[in-house]
Structures are given as C-alpha cells and as structure tokens.
Length: 104
Image 1 (cartoon, helix red, strand yellow):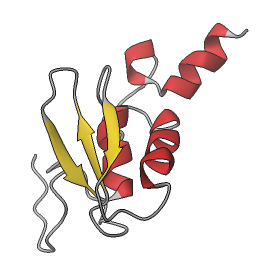
Image 2 (cartoon, one colour):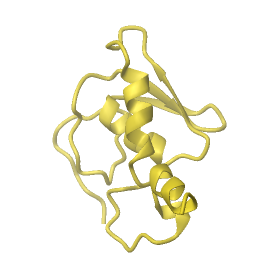
Image 3 (cartoon, rainbow, N blue to C red):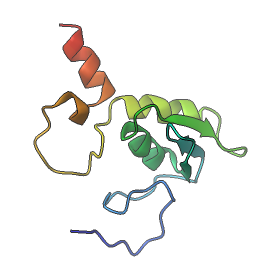
Image 4 (cartoon, rainbow, N blue to C red):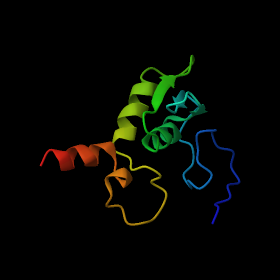
C-alpha cells in the first residue's frame, strides 16, 4: 500500500515513509553508483541508512555540520525503517545494532 502525502517533501523522502521533513534541504546522499538525491537531514539519514556504501555531502548553503549529523543519525537507523515487519536478519538492523552484536 502506498502512502499519499499532501505536503511537499524533499527528494530524499521515500514515498512510503510517512515522516515530514525536519528542516531545509541540506545534504546530497549518493549510492555506490553515484546516483543520489538531495534532502533534509532527517530524510537524508533515513535514505543513507537504507543504502549499502552510501555517502553524504553537504550542499553549499547547508548549516555547519549537516553532513556529519546526517551520517551519525544514519548509523542508528534501520534500513527502510518505515516498514513494520520483524527485524532479526543483520541486513534489517542498523549499523550500530550490527556492531553491538559483533562485539559480544
């Protein structure tokens, strides 16, 4: 089922992610092939968390530290976190959760 949004959101917001933007478009998130999307820090982090070998860069007029905040936030976010399903496989967990499992 697709979620419909009436408010305009940044290009990094996944169509099924119900959350609103939390600020201005400030970062570019790129996948491993170099394809990407500009987004607010919130949706940039959610997109980055869902990519393998993704990268994040600040846009020229971004607030100081935008890319670092986005990168750090993505570390604790599960890939495709808006999907409500059991999450037990390592590919379903955040990078931080996988590190914690490996440190045991």
